[in-house]
Amino acid sequence: MFFFIVGPRARAATACAAAAFASLASQAQSDSQTIVVTAARVEQALPDVLPSTRVISRREIEAAQPADLPALLRQLTSIDVAQTGPLGSQTSLFLRGADSRQVLVLVDGVPYARADFGTASWQYLPVDQIERVEIVRGNHSSVYGAQAIGGVVQIVTRRATTPQFSVGVGSQGTRQVSAAAGTSFGAGETATRVSASLSTRRTDGYSARDAAVDPGANPDRDSARQSGASARLEQGWAPGHRTQLALGTSRTRSGYDGFTPGLDDVLTTRVQSVALTSRHTLARDWTLDAEAGQTSESFADPTGFTPEADNRVRNVGLTLGWQPAPAHHLQLGAESRRDRYSEPGTAAQTRTTDSVRLGWQGRYGAALQVQAHLRHDRSSAFGSASTGLLALGYEISPAWKASLQASSGFSAPSFLDQLFADPALPLKPERSRQAEAALQWRKGAASVRAALFVQRQRERIGFDPVSFTTVNIARAENQGLELMAQLPLGPGAVNAELTVQDPRDATRDAPLKRRAKQSMALGWQGDAAGFTWRAALRHTGQRLDTDPLTFGDAGNPARATLALGVAREVAPGWRVALAIDNATGSRRPEVLGYTAAPRSALLSLQASVK
Image (cartoon, rainbow, N blue to C red; front, side, top):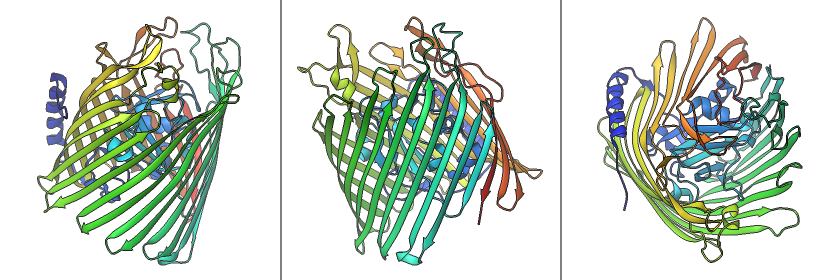
């Protein structure tokens, strides 16, 4: 059974969106050449994708010049970001109101998460090592398994084809250098392609905790240094047979303010990823894809509660694909995932999850599009879960498409959840149901998409103060509107995202913390007078948070930040760029008790050799 309940606020927002559609639809023109893989685990042109999907390209990353991945997502999307300091600071992202541990992160197709907390450490993935980011909003457990209740974020590591170089200096003692190059040997179906990238970024930072709010905070500057490298090898064996190996590594040394006044807390974290994929054509309409990979995160924190630990996720899978007709594609897949967490002096905690899945995409005539998925996961730690997704799209006209989607999903308990569980009451996976109705307009280089969604979660894991254990006692719900637009304006183009929602703890009838009811990202980039100009406005509405002194509930006021940029080509393939973040100097924090990132500037020289 699927739920689709829309409240008065969502209906009012829909009316506003309809009015906006009428005025926006007259402006038009768009790029429909972007290829997406994450939404259905097959290649699709972005206009053909039914789930709500956003792709951030390498070109957008270079234009934004963000300090890290959270800063990039903060500038370009309406996803709620909660970061507790400068580069390397603990970060949470909330997609469609879901917890950070309920958003699945993939690095080159391999799941990336800390098994102890069940969350991904966004802050340790160097932005200079990222080629593109694919963001799919909405429940995708039937496609990828656990932790995809809010959506899926796939990070594709750097893939350079020509020599590229960037060096920059900025405020707070920031220094940044990156280089990438690639080449190929041979031609056609048996070509060998190789690419590699190196980067380093360091900053003197600022005090993570706000001493004006918390007198016990250490007022020192929390510096950070992050280095990264990636490499990619692609080998064609024969027509229809190709193998790819992607490697990534990073080391982040970041200062933070713990709970001992005057103590210099420093955390050193290493993240590594390896992904091997191989595609083979078995017959005219049959393909076999093999995948194997591992992501790992290890840290050393001498002054922390846990001095050192290691998290590791391994994943292997096979997918048999059949295309019975040009507009139809069937997938049958099997996967095995192994999570491992270890600390010195204690036995490692492990669990294995085996899965089978079935996926189908089809098109009937020129108008009707179907996407369906079924999946069954069986875990050695929490039993089994079956999930499904059904999406229908209908092209009302060449420019307009309507779609409906319903899905079920689950989120697995973390090792920390299991540590505090009552052995007599084993934890069950958290369950979710979600539905969505969307309307999309696309013409040339312009596109607008509005989606109404509703989500219900049950069996959420919470802490019971009576039994002093973690149990499946909580429920949550969310409903809202998402608006995404790309439109020409003057000599450039506008990219906009707006999320209006009401994420709530249904058990206590209270807002979920650190999730705003309104979030907006509005950006413009264009060329004028020989320069490329850029502006990005981010608004995050008021949200519930935790008081840093009493640990009770407290309101965090709305915040708005403005990022500005200008660049000019000084010679063929060479350009100078200036980026200013938080240009208005907003001092309102993302997380109560932690210092808001101050105004900062970065001046860089970028080169690309053809």
